Length: 133
Image (cartoon, rainbow, N blue to C red; front, side, top):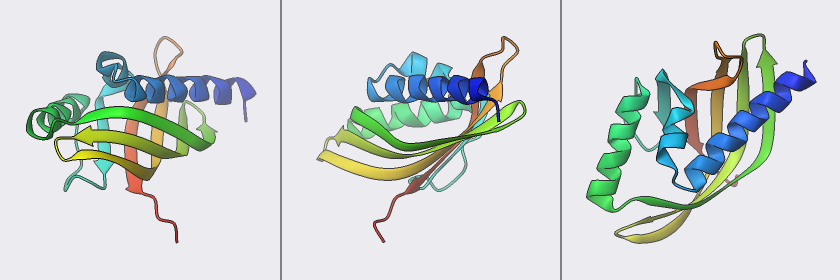
């Protein structure tokens, strides 16, 4: 396992999470490949592109007043596999909607692929509810 690869993927993941936590949407969505896929326990189907996810995000904003207030990542693990790597972690997100504020505890896996420029781009995200059991 390359220490450099682990550090690079961790930096890419940290930047993605920070952009999400700070509602820097261009940076957040820009961390994903255009053809990235998304599986969320809160949506009934897989999203087939970053544009599709961004459109759904805008629906949440328009319909529910959705906004991210904070996001904390813990228990990170990077598993490199050549030009791909799997990043998994626990996520605690504070969000607000028209109904009020809530804290959501989830587990997330993000698959990264090495980009043409040598950096790392997210190509898949899977979000699951985290249980205490």
